[in-house]
Length: 296
Image 1: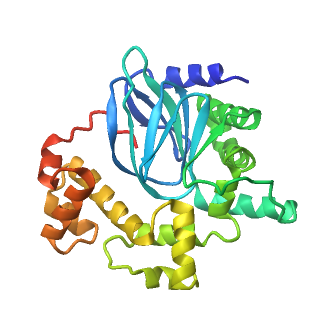
Image 2 (image 1 turned 60 degrees about the horizontal axis):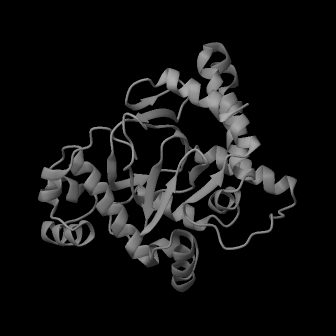
């Protein structure tokens, strides 16, 4: 099994530019044929595998540029900037995006920890919030076996769930495994906090609320949160709110609607913080932003 076979399959199913859902839940194919600058986005737990071209994600000032030599794991919801600044008709960005099922990832992580007696592979530095991992044999085979189901509806219906588990297992056992296990295994308090925050963005959530939610002291929670995401809890919440607002504005919502949706009760405060983060006012952003080929 090779990446070329996977690339041919994706090219056949995604001959035109755009992002398309497949019959496999959570699996999307994309082709981008013109440069897309990095713009605010919110990554859900996702694996992104590139077959040609290069993609970029920026988290708290750190740039992750990757092509067909690495896949990206985002194990938890994160506010990022993302785009494909180098894409063109001659060198399109082609790839697969797989939204991770949190429940399945947790179940697999627990099974692996039980089977290994809780042992961990030796690690150097702590895993990053975003991880780039090599296409090892396990990941390549699992991705091929998953995508080949698209050619047979009966196989897809019967085997789809199992093939997704196989791909998740390959991620958990690969180079990005430590980051994945940290998000879904024992001690996944920060990932659970982020899940909670993602559904309460329009509420005023304090650090104490977040720490209480996972049973930590404020000081320990603050330290653990920054280790996991590179940002302080307050910085993270602000980035999540502003990135979500920027996406809503780009999709056509008014500035006031976007601000209200993400929990801002003062439009002037929203405008100040938005301009401080993005270098332009929300109205300037609304007038300037065009997303012809939306790709998170």
